Length: 173
Image (tube, rainbow, N blue to C red; front, side, top):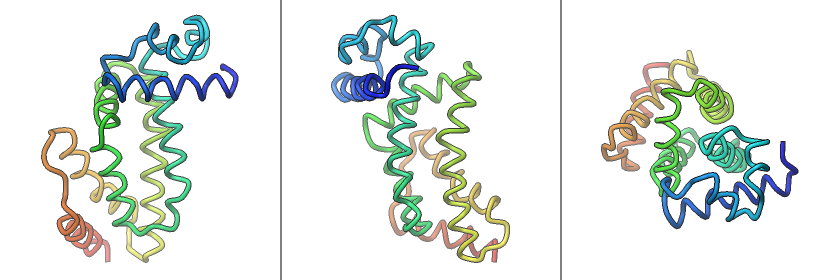
């Protein structure tokens, strides 16, 4: 793996390119130039643009998740909605979602480094609130959020999100 300072530069380059030009701006050549590294440095640490993108997003997400233990279920769900609905992250996640369909390595990394930690965090909050079967409740809480994102439907407004969470959590009481 590349040195930590190189990884930071590459991650910053991915996000800067995406901010300026969206997912289509992400190429190995573009990332290398933006990060001021050689393409061979990229290829030694990441197999593809998707792998670099995933690594950059996972790094950002881990930094965001570190402070979430003090939040409520609603606040964590709202943060998740904001995270997947804000550009350029939304477009980048869509690019990864397409890659997940054909690349088992990216799919596994997505599950292990992004989805499962977020799901575990919400499950922990649901369990701490005393609800029965927190794992099932968490899946029911998240499924409509990702369904709406995937189909590009309007996301929950705050009042709708609160009603959704109350309905689901009441099922687990």
